[in-house]
Image (cartoon, rainbow, N blue to C red):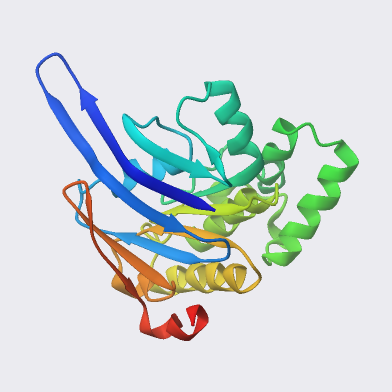
Amino acid sequence: MIKIQNLSKVFRTEEVETKALNEISLEVKQGEFVTIMGASGCGKSTLLNIIGLLDDVTSGSYQLLGNEIRGLKESEKSKIRKQNIGFVFQNFNLIDELSVYDNIELPLIYNNVSASERKKKVEAMAERLAISHRLRHFPQQLSGGQQQRVAVARALINDPKIILADEPTGNLDSKNGNEVMELLTDLHANGATILMVTHSDYDASFSQKTILMKDGIVLSEKLNSRNVNVLA
């Protein structure tokens, strides 16, 4: 599903050149749950942004669903992103002025889904994530865990082929964080492909494989003991 070979990313200013990613190679197969870990500044968020088609590569190859992404126009990348990728962020990134219903519905509007179909999809997704009773509320009326459930609902509403989660429990207490990780685990059990960035060893233990990064390179890959039989 995701195949990266010798990928590098360089940020340049007039005075400084910073190599954020240095000839990285990795692969994420359909149905896998993979975690990327590493200290702040190691390049993991840069890598996630490139995989999510939010940033460009400097050199190397990035293939998504068998298609080479490097060199595509922004309009082409935007279309691929909307059709195939769902994002879950640490800060939820919900729109405070919109209700829960409207926040979840927004990606469907961008994809020109009819009003009747949007209503059906939003209500089904809200029921799936146990937030039907919150559809008319606004984000600031919800707990952190509930807000992240809304964010997950929004990420899933277009049936993406891959979910990218950037520190999904970073702003949550232990109880709400655990609920979100159990939710991601359930989604994975039902066939979702998930790539998650985290600082938490506990959160990483829910995934099948952990990729450790340092100074813009992949330092190691290991199977997680909790889920090693899933990959066998």
